[in-house]
Image (tube, rainbow, N blue to C red; front, side, top):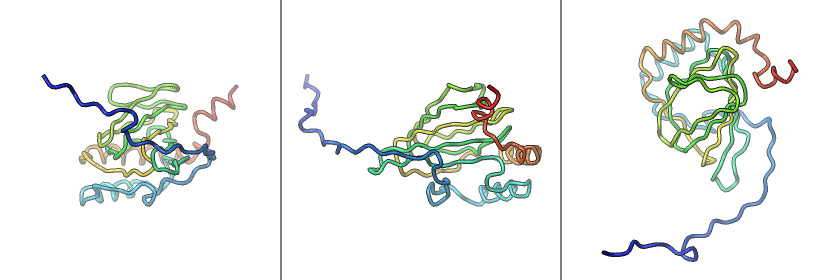
Length: 188
């Protein structure tokens, strides 16, 4: 039986050591230029039109910012605040991602995740979630500084569910000016 080949540590390509980098909590908006849209076909455009017809405007139900992109392209950290009842489109990214709940809660399938919980989504794996009654804040840690969002699996029923969230929550979202983690700090 042949022995399995192994690569000695000396033969492995060295990873160039980076330098320490500091970033601000302000970050930059996660625009389509910073996170290109893929999988946008006629059905996705019709879904976006349905959302807009039901009150969807940028930032109404969510704030998403990229806090850090590692200069060598290997890592990024993003922040998302999704207001009460917001429903994300089914989508994937071309990078592995670990999500950490900072405040509020979200429903991922049948599971409810709260502050301190998290989940892992492998690259190209489709998912969606719904923000809880107080909204949800998440940190997103990716194994790439460059990544896209691919829309997939959004049937008419899912677009209607997202549109209903805009219809029913737009007025209350305008009054949700403080994310869940800040509300807890103020209440103490």
